[in-house]
Length: 350
Image 1 (cartoon, one colour):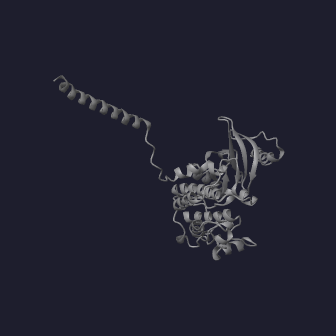
Image 2 (image 1 turned 120 degrees about the vertical axis):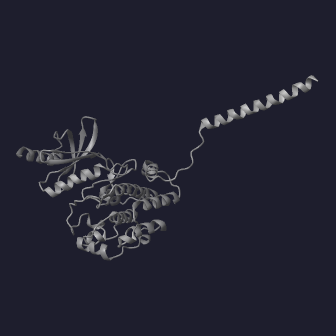
Image 3 (image 1 turned 30 degrees about the horizontal axis):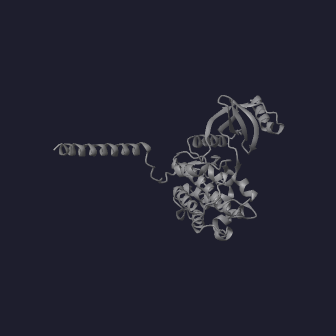
């Protein structure tokens, strides 16, 4: 056990030394890319198939935390969607639990927002479509994320959006829940009123957080703020944010209406599911004035459309069908000429 603890310590500090030669399981650790209260996140290499992966570790002895970490692996590992981070593996190395996911280049959405650089409205809407599409898939698989926020959204270089971190996710169907009644999980600024009150949550809880994120992306500041966490929670529970039309002038009315409905205090007043949100966003995107393509827009426009099975245009006639019709017309023409000759020849012999 002592060797395992020292190994964990070396892993925890290896990213600072730059001389990492350690492994977790079969995976070769390259560098430390992040840390949290329960462990760290590393960029690593799978030596068997020569690909980069991300490894998230849990190094604490608390059994509830370790059970939640294992639950994250189970819930996220059964979700396969282009807008959700793919889980490759889960295992143990001594006392360390580790979760292996695809390594995602690019940057988190909170970095994009913090930079404050103007983004085309079409690009913002496309990011929201990706998030909505991924959440729709998770919800339909019975998984509530419960921590939707910009730092859990990764924007890849080609514009593809990935939802990350199912660490506090909840199964709608599991008989055993790891969250105690009345215990709030999630990030304060994005909590839904029912989460603050410790009431049961469902997919509409994620929809509220999605609305808060959408508001923030559109105007680059959060709808609910305060000088303390308690003040933020009070604002979420009892105050209305500054109207989005005033916070982000020029936002299409349909988009303003969508975001405001997603952030309604009463869950019954919100959208019942993510699919209607995604479809409305697609309609808003399609109604925007054409703009010069951006890297983000090029990367994912067709994919989310396919994911939600939008009606497509009728396929163009196949070349083989046209050739067959031409051949049939030629045969009919030859037959008509032959019949005419058979009728004329006897007349000419008279």
